[in-house]
Length: 303
Image (cartoon, rainbow, N blue to C red; front, side, top):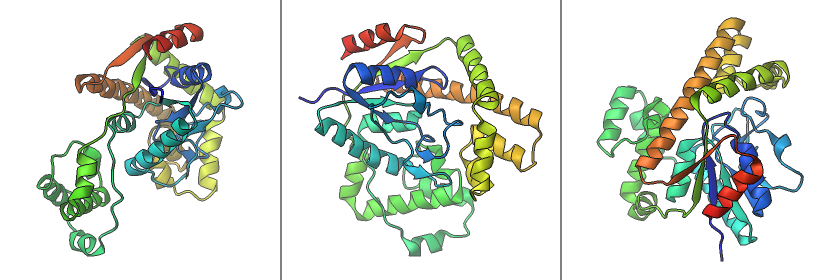
């Protein structure tokens, strides 16, 4: 009998990784990351992989699966996560999903399947040169826009139109995408008061600068040949440190801008998870400062 997956969610700096590792260790599980930036190799400090927290022998998945500079997407994540889950369950282990990327967590638990849509060169050529506003108008005529990232660049908007055109020609693929098969998971949220969250974010950022070599990490990525614009695309640490290293902002602007951005990001994460609850997901919130053994016992009782 397959054991119910467990998903551990919460805002940045709340201790999700430590909790997920404790749960996986106690319940014979393996970690499936749900973090949109931990997929990239070489981006360790800024993404908070905290691999030192993983005891020897505990397996993890969807970390370091793409090179830095690549733009990994939701389709690839869902494909790779489903494959990892099938592998874990096939070996009789429990799946422990851990991450703060709400779109990844929700899409995976909803059971959304995004078919592989090939490139349509004639369509792309016909759309090339259109304004982002016009592309968005075309896309709105094809579907209801739930995900604004579909139209944050012309390239993404063209790809979204390409997918919708493919669905029109292949209704069986559209059925897979639009009729998800939900995952019956126990969802655990790490509940942390706002003032503690802000304190821990600031303390962690200081450690990353002063002790963990985050600035050196970003410099090394640039020196390895990764274009600054590709690092800026990843946002937060990689955006602000890259802007500083290429001389567009000074050190003070970098540090204060980054800290503010991380606080805002944590707030958006919580907005997403509260939205998940409104959309029917039952998130069992547990205090962030529970001892590990008690946290695990509370999770075990939910399974």
